[in-house]
Image 1 (tube, rainbow, N blue to C red):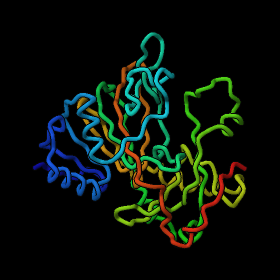
Image 2: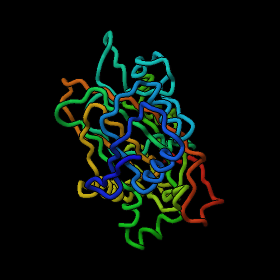
Image 3: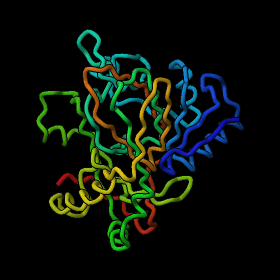
Image 4: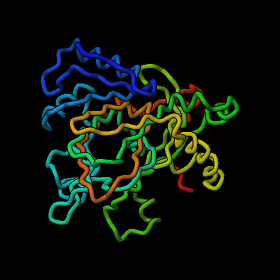
Length: 298
């Protein structure tokens, strides 16, 4: 089988003793999945597999979610496979081959601006800077449980509008107002239910949550900032310090992830597959089930 060791936060664990480049029988994968339900960030060290092996393992978790950028667009030139996304600062012929090239990244949940977001992310380290570029994770079940009962009651029936404003705009001539109007958007409950465990998850993030519906943006911003400050606390995060050959698999519903800064002169290259959720996130509080609101931008 394999060995499972909890890391410095209860929601993160390391699995050793497996070569993911070789076929896994159903019994072993079932045990991996059970470990993932308990530890929504799993780290597999010392893997050496090609893109096909990576894809085959990702497909065990569900249907793959294509990357946002189409072939040939900036940040999507390294592969003709529409399901592969590279996170990289490397340029070929003066063009970035991947997305999110440099700098720190705010905490976020991938594709929360889509009606059906990602269930899982599988990120594989290929070229790693010597210092920095750590991927940071936070357990949003833990963040929800840390809220006061008053705040839990306030957000129980609330929904938010999430929006995608890419760091590399597809049309660099767009104004900010045009980008907001034409960006991908979705409305989701502030508190969602984990589809398998039923646990409540605070589902807002600094990178993509635009406003709380039903109140003005001026009223929404300071309330959201209180949640974002909780998420940003270093005390609750797991910081993954990459080594070449690492594969990190995270539950994109339950966790958020970000990135620490690193030297932009050092090459960084990681390969990612994402997996679709089975359905749109469902509210944890049943009173909001029949009240999905419209998008709100003001």
